[in-house]
Image (cartoon, rainbow, N blue to C red; front, side, top):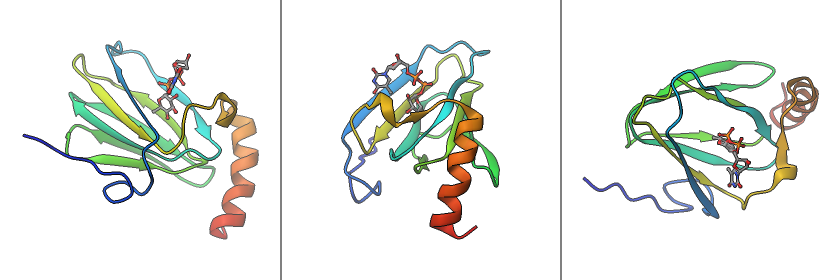
Length: 124
Ligand code: T46
């Protein structure tokens, strides 16, 4: 099997960075942050992992267990990754280079900024 992914057509941005997460213990939960600008597509190319995506208004838990399925996460969405299977490899396509200043890691801080962001951008 071969699954190609092209920037700006299969994913809604130019791909500037690719990284992958693997060898994560089953009881480890990662993420716990949002990004101010970054957009990403997460693909579990082997095994399975669950992703919690959350805003101040709603949250959803998504099982990634199919290498042909990608999860788009836009800016200002809180994410946590958990329940990694032993063989899980989570591939991430990112719209920007790594920027430590793009992260919001404190949830209270995130909630405050995100409420304003979504009210202004989605009219909620
Ligand atoms: C995200 C989820 C899905 C780098 O040096 N370059 C990079 O491109 C990345 C992504 C990370 N790092 C360093 C920074 C930390 O010292 O790798 C270390 C682990 O990063 P972090 O704790 O942010 O990893 P996760 O798994 O919590 O989150 C990552 C991404 O950071 C994040 O953007 O959405 O995967």
